[in-house]
Image (cartoon, rainbow, N blue to C red):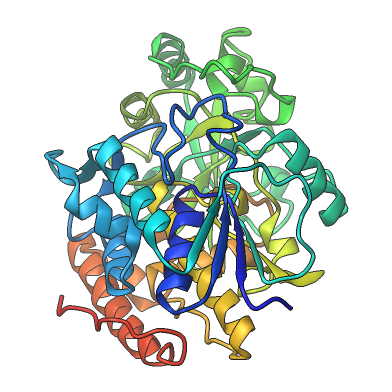
Length: 446
């Protein structure tokens, strides 16, 4: 084991990881291939460059993204510190001046006495750790090949298909029914039946809806299993009724009513507080998703924890490959962080970089750290990426990841407030156990 920490990739996750370790007195060697080797989307060689948006998500005080930011503030996050300092007016969102934000982070890392920033592409994985791999969704081809060899599987899938996730409390259960096709299984699916007229109006709006354009570096090569629902609908007016919305074997269990089409929802967690719209991966814009998917019977007042998407992304099957501390099960001195482990969003990537850094520092110092509590936003994300069962897809922070009695409170505002209070109290206790690694400011009262 080396006496320093190696970090590959100076995006948001890598930059946060480097800062946390350096501030704790750990020497860091940080590799970033830009600007020597550019990517299809980055325009500069700055660390933590924002490429898709200048927004770091909601800053509304009763939201899950706000809670994640607050937890990071309590951990002295470089990313959130720079975002707060370089913020621009954006309503309830935390938006930043991109150039000032990235320039400040770059300057901070370059000037830190414990950080050596190397502008070169890494083509071989250092096997003497600890090492944090934070190369992001646009990992270079040469390094991707090294990762495939290391992991022993072809994990590189360039289109991840995300279906919307809905707050169970916002579903009108009187218009839905539980059933499995042909009565097989334990009626695990929640079903929304549609008449012919409802179905035809739904398909008509689906075809007219505004779609998100693909980036220049993306090619619309989809597998049949993750075809956008609007692309399927374009093949013919009844395609969905014979595909993901087929009603066969799904008569209403009480009335025996037969439907022209049936939308199925599957539990996203054991508690049943969140449901996934089965087969609804899509390239529709977010406003169009909210408008059109609320046409489905029972979802008229749906609240979305996550909206659907299909986009180019490189990520590993983290629940199979990583331990709870984000280290590789087969090589415990190699840690992963950021979008490559299956988190969506700038802030989420930063949070995983911070966690990986803490655990890598603990490995260097021979200290086994307690994982962040699952009732915190950071802990809920960690639990998802290392413990998700079944089909694994990238996820951003949302209250659907949380468990506990709070999720059963019908008043959404009160529920969210309780979750946030519980999370910050849990984080305060957890911070006390990090004093051997680094001193942190205590959380501010909510």
